Length: 130
Image 1 (spheres, rainbow, N blue to C red):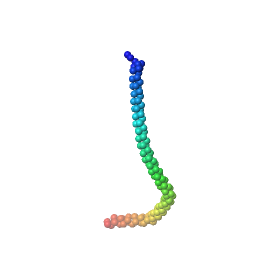
Image 2 (tube, rainbow, N blue to C red):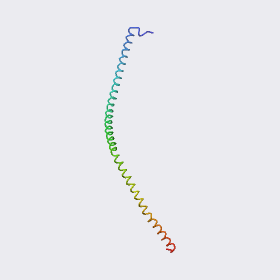
Image 3 (cartoon, rainbow, N blue to C red):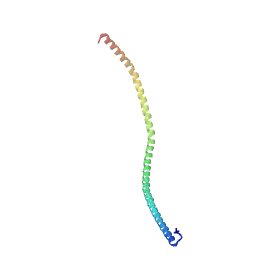
């Protein structure tokens, strides 16, 4: 068996083959790097669009939060007036309850008189057969 690396002809072929293999390997690595760079560029381009949308969304959210803050401020300003109105309504309800109580007191004797008169009329009807 002859050793290919020892002879001049065999050694030249091995060196030539290994040189070709290196060129192929380097070419493939360059192509892979090119594809990788294109993929990274695509991702960065898409990321740029996503960041622009995120920025717009953040701006919209900021304006929404500003309106929300204004609304809460108006509610805070309105609350004391609402409390005062509730206090006035409670005072009115207390007065109405007192008026109803007085009315019930005034009507109670009439109701008793009405019941007595009805009882007497019913008794007369029963005895007379009407």
